[in-house]
Length: 406
Ligand SMILES: Cc1cc2nc3c(=O)[nH]c(=O)nc-3n(C[C@H](O)[C@H](O)[C@H](O)COP(=O)(O)OP(=O)(O)OC[C@H]3O[C@@H](n4cnc5c(N)ncnc54)[C@H](O)[C@@H]3O)c2cc1C
Image (cartoon, rainbow, N blue to C red; front, side, top):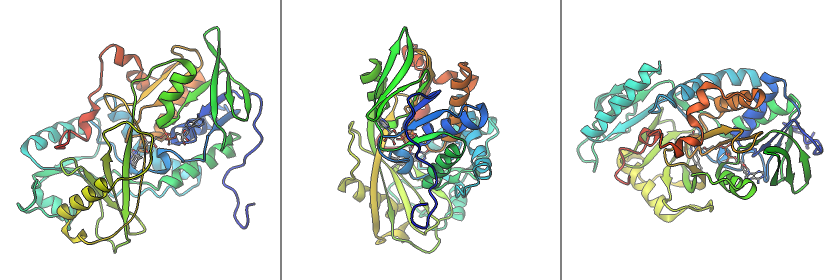
């Protein structure tokens, strides 16, 4: 017990050996640990986190979940994730606060509508609930939207994805950490991985600032730090740039926004949290950086974009702003790979700004990969070698194609 509160997970002493070591207490690491223990009976697992659970993107995101990706490789993964969140809420016996309020993506030109039609057709082909909507229906869905011609970029229509929505990011981190810990996984916060030992082409240990751990399986799920870990510890170069994404919330308001609204052209998305705040984001500083501050330029941009799209928000105050690291690959799709170039070394990184929504299902498949040493079919297209073979995925088009900045 901690004061009156029961701790969500235990913190046992670090053992000298584990069956598997996971670098990073973000959602990709935690969910892999949870599925290793719950589906494969591999419970002798350590999650090593240099700060605290959810310190990285997992505790800083705007918690939007949706399956309206673009490519046939990505769509099934995100669809399964969307279906898995409610199941996990039951299974973990923890309220993940899934609110499937639906996502409305706006189009501001004929060209954007045309691209959206393609995206909707691909998603529908994969059984995802999504449809095109005209400006009038956009207004019915979000009455505070300005659909007049006064806008710099008038609204031509959009795509509506009713099954998407938001979760509560802290709840997901805590629920997943508690679930893993209950099954015997060791969670070590305030512990940094400093090296990965390799002998005869195989992982044999992991060094931490609290001592060495013998292990034959390690997962690099260190988010914005994963490329640095791969390079410093194994000499591997990953095609990942680290950029900063910023987000903010307004003062709480009465319920006025019942869906997630996104506009690539205005470079902005917004939804109303259960506390009444308008949570908004999308801005990504275009230069590589590891800082997690916010900029005046972004705050001004966001105020202008929101005020133009939803004029009743003019004058509403921003209460907090923050940012986090995004590990971006050239095709905006992740790297999920294993046993290359070292046996027993696995990677789940390069998630950019898509990695919250997918984390449950990725954990499920990465756990299967680590337990069986066989790459599940669904993960095969995400191997690192796609960059060498020039088989990039074009997932960039899922979000930013319609923006004037891109
Ligand atoms: C502002 C913002 C908004 C976003 N909005 C969304 C959204 O709405 N929907 C969505 O799907 N995604 C969103 N994302 C992206 C999403 O948050 C990330 O893709 C996801 O959280 C990545 O999870 P992860 O587990 O890979 O990494 P992280 O959560 O970053 O976890 C990695 C962890 O590794 C730890 N670590 C690093 N180095 C070491 C080391 N040497 N030893 C031990 N530990 C180490 C870090 O401290 C960190 O806690 C957003 C991101 C941000 C920043």
